[in-house]
Length: 362
Image (cartoon, helix red, strand yellow):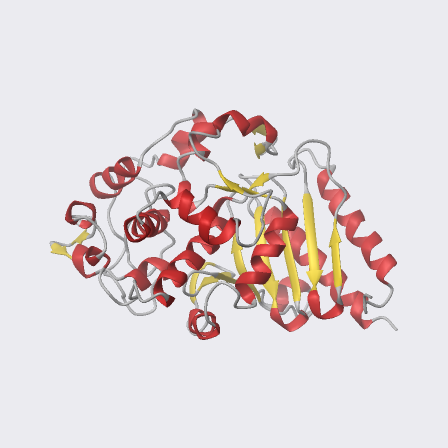
C-alpha cells in the first residue's frame, strides 16, 4: 500500500499538469510516469490521443552505457584502453586531428562515455559554412550509415579540444556511434540485437524496441515529433541515429529500465558510483558524468526552492528519463518537441515540485 500523503490529490495535480502541457499547440501526446519504490507508489498519466510509444532520442545513451558496463564487468572491455584496441584501424584513423596533432589512437572508451574525447559531433555541430547535419534533417528526411558518420566527422568538422583536456567536455553523438560499434565488435552481433538480448528481453520491456530500417513502416504508430508546431516526418533519420538515439519506448518501460539501471541490476554497484564522481558542464544546467547526465538547477531558477539533483538522461525529442535520489523518485516521459528544448525540463521540474509539496503536507 502506498505511503504517499494525500495520494489522490497528488495524482490529480500531476494529471492536470500533464493535461495542460498536452493541450498546447507545440506538444504532442504528452505522457509521463512517476514512481517511488520505497513508498510503493507508481503513477502514469492517462493515455493521450494517438500512440503511447515515443522516440526517447538521446536517452538511448543510458541503454548503451549499460551495455558497455556489462562488457566491462565480463572482463572484455577496459574503459581506460584506447578505442582503437576494439575497432578496425580505419574507423579511428584521422578522427581527431587538431592543430597538426593526431590523437585518434589515444582516445579511450571512458572519454567516449563522458564526452571528453573532443571528437566532433557529426549531428549538431556546425560546419564552416554554418550548416549542420541536424539542420539538413529538419528540411528533408535523410538516412545515413556508420560510414557516413565517420566521413562527416573526419572530413567536414574539427575536434573541439585534445582528448581528456582538464575540465572540458563536449557533447558529441559521434562518441556513442563509436560505442555502438564497440558493442557490435565485442558481441559479434548488430548493436540492436545486443540491446534486445542483454536489456530489453531480460527486463521484459515489451513495448520498447530499436527503430531501424527494418521498422520504418511502424513510424506512424509512434507519437509524432514536432518542430515548433510543425509535425516532422523523418523515419529515415530516426532509423539512422541508432546507438546515439534510436530507441522507441513507453513511459512505463522507461521507468522499469531506469529502476534496473539505478538499482544495480544491470551491472555492479561500484560502476554506478564511479560514473557519478566527476561531473562536467555540457549545456548548463546539465552536466555529464560517465554515461549519464545530471540536471541540477540553481536555486534562483526555482524562486529559491531547493531542487534536488536528478540523474539519468534526456533526448532532443523532448524525452526525459531521470531519477531523483534524494526523493527516491523515478520519472519518464515526453513532450515530443524538438525545437523548444527547455519545455520538457520545465514540465519535469513542475512535476517534481508537485511531488515534493505532497510529501510535506500532513
